[in-house]
Image (cartoon, rainbow, N blue to C red):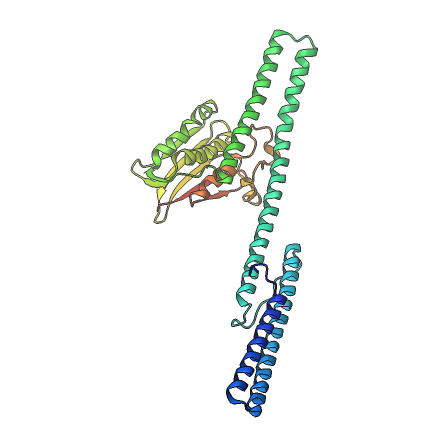
Length: 343
């Protein structure tokens, strides 16, 4: 008989029969050797006592195993339904302490997974809602333009204006998609920053190159103070993206003939990049919310943008071990300070 298929009840019966046969054989041998009834009786009583002790011990262990298996199954069922926490064992020397301890660990892992799944589901729902809200307006505008051009006679000069408006809406959709791709790659870990010791001057120059044309159109004076020798561990591509987003916001919200100042300082633990402007400023109550995805203040919806630049900038800097600090008040401009660790 295979031991894997041997049940506890059959094992107990088999053990009992084996002991009974062994004791019978032992009594017969003693009688044959001594022919003394008293010795045989004493041996018989001793054997009965030993057999009773063995039967009592086996019954106790079987009962303990049965009770534990019932408790184990109930606890697992309750844990799966999330109703209770597994019981704590006070006596660490208990036979079942290791199993109970691992049940507790399993319960913690299951709870953590539940929280993680719930958070991911909530984030996904929020993301879908945000994307739906952001693409609704450009798509509606494109449908209106397309319908007008198809159903009405439009003069050539108005056709050109409609086409320019259509291109603007397509650019907005393209920018949104590209920004969402970058964000999703960072958040899901598909792409992680590749930090290397390299000059921050070249990274900042790359970011500034993307905003100088728009700054010139608005006659904004851009002043930069960055020593060429400063070196910090960072990912040039993604850090340039983060700095560009902050600088791009500064250009958008700074009025014509305004001023943007960029300075870089080397601290003991961090490299500090300060980007200040002379724009409308941000009320203190909104300092935390400006970094949220798709957040835009009610009074700036006439300015081009979708409200994802600062969110993406913070994600990039945070993934490199740094942080962003904002100082601003209404009608006094804003200053975004990016801190990158020097290690």
